[in-house]
Length: 395
Image (cartoon, rainbow, N blue to C red; front, side):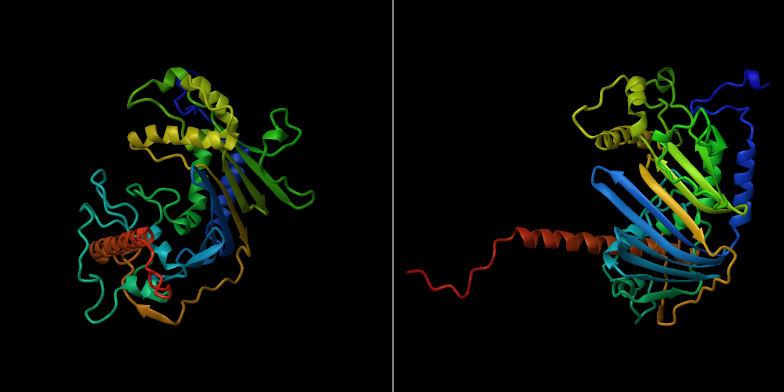
């Protein structure tokens, strides 16, 4: 039967069997995903604006209790604590709130994505200054803007990854850090195969390996995910239905396992190493006077124009590292005590489902206020300076 199965456009085969290495990685996933731990999730993204780093440091007691701190380019921006149904959030950098606001729902989906509100478009902002607050009390947005904790007693995030979500990788770094195991499981399915790292293998290329090698006698075993070949030129075609490469075609990923538990995951979406192949497939020429890293950004932007036009997620060119410590230790998550109660439904994938509609409105208000502040700042910068009152009169 395998002989008659057709290779798909993604370079995967229908008769791909699980290697022993793949089975060991899947076993380690099962052994690790439910354990308490402390973790560091680090993502570095490359685009035409440069390099941006986001870190999430946290600890996990179990599936329903965790705390995390998000930092962007080394600057702490957000603290979040979840204990059962309760959620507490504070923004250490209030302008960063906009990244985490609930998005307006889209007509293409039946649900509202992760934490979405349903099927309605974003309502117009209410000039009343907040719709989700109890009368006489400040809205959650106002409290968060003052760097204080807001506690929503039933606002804990729902499942981070569902079939109906429109949340993309990078939208919410805490969600991304909590979904690494599901991400690795999906990467296994998308890889050509999983192999144990072996520097003596004839197929191993040290000059193309971006990851750390396990130290001798450390007890750590590394497993590598082999990426599929790029689509053939005959498969790419033209127009709206053309096949474009996916992140899987550029993914280099390794998983480090010790005592049958995962202790580290690393990933690199490596476009640079496949620029020549992309030129051949798409019969194009990239600039030769630019650094390869810049050319890779250009190539990904061009691919993403096609992908987003087809309704596909854009390729996110990034380096990712997820490391785990204190596995199965006595990790405890305590809620902060200096909190103010409020609805956190203005934040994506947070808040009570019944508050989602108000959350969409409050999120719209925050965006409108931020835009107004930005416009006012631009007008002020463009205005001529006031006359110098200390200057002597003319003549």
